[in-house]
Image (cartoon, rainbow, N blue to C red):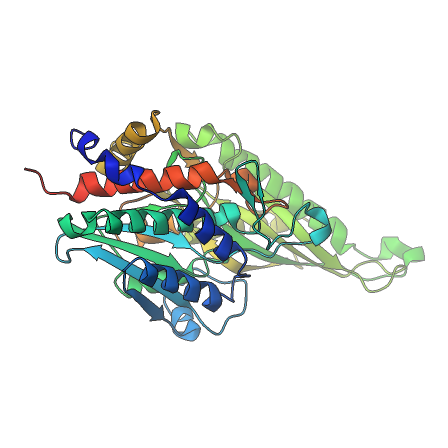
Length: 423
């Protein structure tokens, strides 16, 4: 990385106060998945402010849903807006900086000690829904683009930087897929999801499912004449527990085994019963099933169906009255980039120069837009961003402001090293 020291001044020029201002503005916009138009207006305005012409991709959600690789959805929507910003020279290498601008609902406000939409700062940390996942990373991208433009580096780049801000990541990633179909691909991409500034080179995935489990109704006083659908659900849950254990014990990749339980299965929602003194004849359960590294979501679905079918076949009642299984919501395949690929190697070197430590290359158990860029966009991609994912989707979600700035500085250094012509 011989070029980095000579270009350190550009990364040092990231404006911390501006990044903080932008992040606060974004958090205060309630961009819950399905309602991203307002926050995209703010992102476009910030791009224009720094001299980058914003471009919008408006995809009809019905058209997106007709794509054979549609990654599912969990929220109704009428729009699917993406915003792009470009600097540098088209026609050469293209680097992508990618962030999603949708957030999950805040939940019960009583569980927060701050206003979920207030962008309050405490001890150098900003709080609010989306602070960590992932408006902090979006602010890092915007701050990096601003630093490159203000230093004149954008005019010197031998290639193009394309910043892409996409909707609908939280419920599947159809915003990213729509952007890919519109040409948002490149030679390398960094998604600034929260990683505590380590480099994620592999991630698992997940599918969500709905089980409809039958029983046979009877009066409570004659319960032996009935078959409880709840008991039948327990039978299937025990089968899922056995399946979860086997799938995790079979994993050998250190990136995943280090996590402990990379492929979790849960039942998170159960509904059933109409009368307290009637044996349940129907229970509906919804849950999440992990997608193993190297698997597509369709392959994981086949594993899940095989588990449920085998459990039903082994039960006297369910053999003749099997449960039905439906895949719902987001469909997250897995993805991986080799540890020695030039992208994570170069990004880690830039981070080491800027931060004074070399980030670890790690795997994560959750799904992300990375798999769409890798699998559908043929774009090598890693995840590197501010904040600890343990605080994502939680009450009092937060991100350290220093990490937001440090992420931006690393992005600047990486872009300049990759795209500045050699003398």
